[in-house]
Length: 78
Image (tube, rainbow, N blue to C red):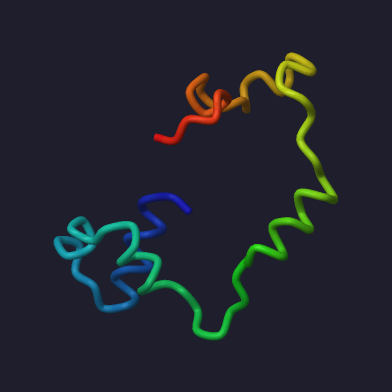
């Protein structure tokens, strides 16, 4: 969704533009989340990972752009 679309959604929710720009991403998600809508849990993530596994690092040039930074490849946390 574009910023303009997000701002239109905020106005439709009664949020003034000044207040919209002060919202954190977490606050925005809480405001726009649909109650009772299922979310992706750990089981769902693992099912997706099993269905569409990533290739080995450096397997092809097309995967190089999706590889994480070297610190993440080495197992370090940020």
